[in-house]
Image 1 (tube, rainbow, N blue to C red):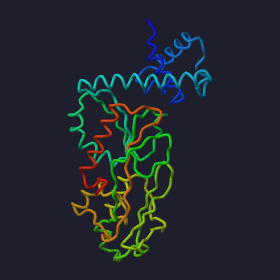
Image 2: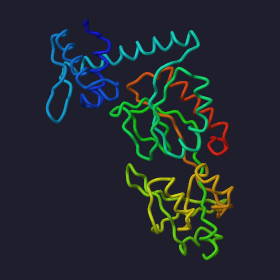
Image 3: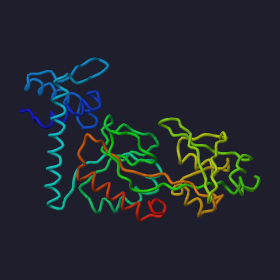
Image 4: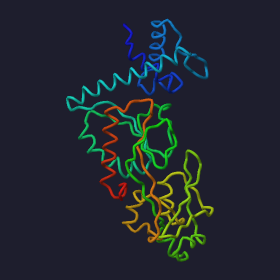
Length: 306
């Protein structure tokens, strides 16, 4: 069978990006033997060795590094060409892998997906929801929705919304606890803290009212690294928590949680869609990004002007 050079180039690029044959094969939806055979055939055709292979690691040779840069650019051009032709017929198609924080997935994106699939029936989504910060290139992810300041210079970002927070507790906890009419009163209470799972860094809330500012730096009664779990702990009456409004809105409406310190404000966390600099923004990722931005703009719990 004749070598499909473009697909072999695509396989080689994925191996370089993820550092191994099995990961590359998984991200491409192919068997590892198929990917290995494609690269061997490509090396034979070019007459050069593209990869250093060992039992522990696969890395490009000097020639492979140079070939990767040109091949990656060519593949991106081909993908963009195919997308533009599809768009000319009012069709955007392809598979998009996207990672997002659990609250964004559960409380915003998933409920609205029927609208997205109706608009773009030829796009297939692979959605991952977690609190961890994934390596987009290494794991073969097209884009991600992320909260907070972005420090990774290898990523292109587009601000799409804000995650708003408030202080809250269960009525069962507040019924037997001291009154909370100022943030300093929290020193007398059980505080449920949050650690970011990727870094272990503690979330330290700051509240403001006019010219007053108060940073809660007390040691938490308990730590959590998942927003949904922290919410469950607050509903169970374990203490006071600072949680995303989108995550707890239905609990507030049901009376399972009560907002406290209502006259104090917390800074919102910016939400962005990010994708690697190494990849041209494809039509399928662009329409997904536009849709997420539109979705957040229409929801006061997520809107940048909310």
